[in-house]
Length: 207
Ligand SMILES: NC(=O)c1ccc[n+]([C@@H]2O[C@H](COP(=O)([O-])OP(=O)(O)OC[C@H]3O[C@@H](n4cnc5c(N)ncnc54)[C@H](OP(=O)(O)O)[C@@H]3O)[C@@H](O)[C@H]2O)c1
Image (cartoon, rainbow, N blue to C red; front, side, top):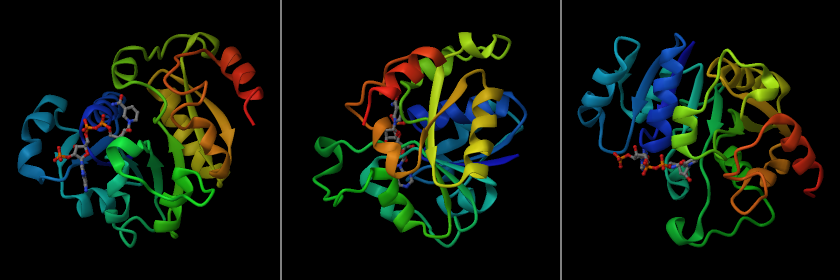
């Protein structure tokens, strides 16, 4: 699969390395431009290329967005139309400024900016060092750490869930994009590494 990465810092670069390690082609991008991504591409190897944001958006069947939330309105909606867009971003008022969501989850706000895209909230709840080091592809699913997924389209969630399994984690579905507030900072499942059974029990206690 071709996977575009928009925002290639802690979480984007970690995901790019993992996706390439299981055989996917990745195009990494950031705000400074492709020249700044030479060392990352060299480290990942032949399955990686450096791209502009527009190129990464066009390249991916799946596009992971892992940049500061405040910049989401700069995402190229036309290029991302029809794509599975994985929103790994988290909103922190202190970093991103005060934003009025009018009852929407942060991923619903992203989806409104990307009306043609199939937005899935995932990869946002796990610290990047855990993501880097704790995948266990050979372990049974009950013994793998969970990555949560939310979205309005089952097929798009399945695509992202398969990627999660390939890199050694197990997906747990938290529901629709509206339900994705359960994955946001402050939730009991946020930045709390857990296995599937505990994840389901914890989720059952969240409104
Ligand atoms: N850190 C974690 O463990 C973690 C875990 C889960 C989710 N997240 C979420 O993932 C997002 C990124 O976090 P991070 O820790 O990976 O941040 P980071 O290390 O600071 O990396 C941010 C990346 O976004 C790029 N970027 C900034 N503005 C951009 C724009 N307008 N267009 C394209 N790329 C842009 C940066 O490019 P330049 O360097 O060129 O400016 C950089 O590559 C945040 O929303 C965060 O809440 C983080």
